[in-house]
Image (cartoon, rainbow, N blue to C red; front, side, top):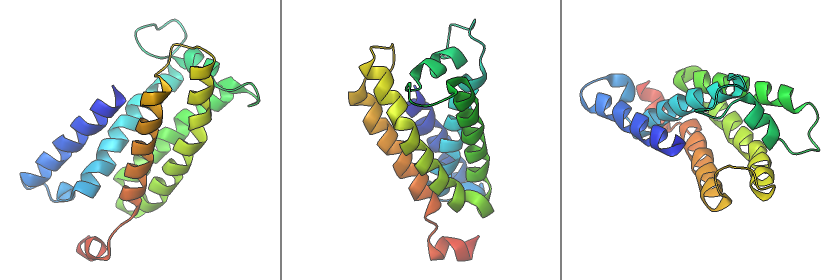
Length: 155
C-alpha cells in the first residue's frame, strides 16, 4: 500500500508540473513530494491508539521493535516524529538535501525492526517484499537529496 501511495502521489505531482505548476516541473521534486505524502501516511500509524484495528497502530509498531532496543513505545513515537519532520523537510527546498540524507539513514535504521518482526512470525510485510521497498525508499530519499547544479540555478 505504501508503494502505491508513493507512486500515485509522485505521478499526481508530476502531472501538476506538466500542467504548469512550476514547483513540480521535475521528476526529482515530484518524487520528493510523493515520498513526503507517503511518510505522512506511515507516520500517522505511530500515533494511532491500540483500539484501532483497520490500520497498523502504535502497539503493532511497538511489537516490531527488537528486544535489544530500550523503550520501544517511546522509540515508535520518536520515529513517527522523525518521519513527519523528514516529510516537512522534503517539501521545503532549503532543507530537502538534509532531509533526504537523514531519511535514508532513518530507513536503514528501521530495517532491523522489519526483519525482527518478520522472523518473529508477526503479521507484517514479508521480507522478500519489504527489503526491496526499503531500498526504493532509500533511493528516492537520496535522489531527492541530490540537487543538480542546473536545478539549483533554476530554483
